[in-house]
Amino acid sequence: MILDSSRWTATLAGRRVLITGAARGIGAALAARLHERGARVALAGLEPDLLAAVADGCGSAPWWTCDVTDRARVEEVVDGAVRELGGLDVVVANAGVAAQMPIIGGDPSVLEQSLRVNVLGVYNTLQAAGPHISHERGYALAVASLAAAVHAPLLGAYSASKAAVEALGNTLRAELKPWGAKAGVAYFAELDTDMTRRGFSTEAAAAMTNSGRASSLISAVTPLKVGIDALERGIARRSKRVVAPWWVGGVLPVRMLAQPVVDRAVQSGLRHILEVAREEHVELTTPQPDSAR
Image (cartoon, rainbow, N blue to C red; front, side, top):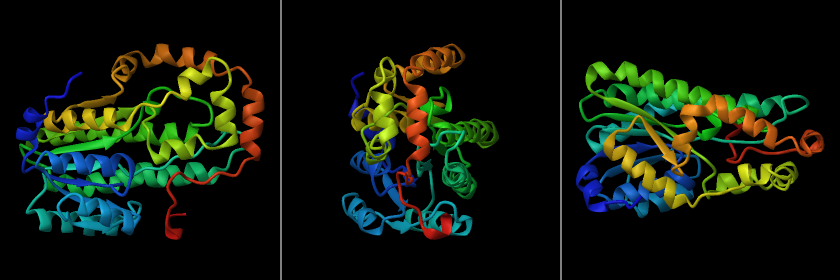
């Protein structure tokens, strides 16, 4: 699909947007795109040097270091963004982590940390920003994943957390409607980001992506620009769903049919892959503060 940038520039100009997880990847690229379209952005993330660089590229945008699992800190950042921008029109709850975890024999802390960051962090962001975007132009976007709908081996912790993000976004949509505000959920397959590269860097992931039919299902990576284009359109339209690449939109309505296809495709060599994963120590794709562990 060709993006009519002039149309979205007119729609996004002056829009006041807070983005979490803005130090790198999707968050950083989205901040740059929205700034280019005339929006006023505020940034939150864990890595101050990277955040400062992103902010400099966005017209000296305000930014804060923020562990989204710290509810009080999230509220401080939201209040700061409202103060700096003179209000808030859009919040993008993008901060998230991933790590492989076999359900049997895997590290339980991966699930605990994934739920803490991906679910409680999104909740903290949406509940703090919610009162400020509860108006006719308001919009909240919760960044989930295709993994919320279709589930693959080793991704139980990530899929569970993103399914919860989907539920939060869908629930918030109904709760915002009386105020004229809207909420959406973003579903991405693998985009070309640091998070994806780190996730695929493990021995078990390498074995999975080389295992017959599973390779084409799991290892296909989409250019980041495709996801940012979709986010730009979605925010401008205040869409219910944002998808990238395009075919993800076709999978979501038939998720119950897609799951058995994935289950069959990943069986080749799966016993060995799981054994490798159980012996492998992995870190979250984004290092977390000690207080969040």
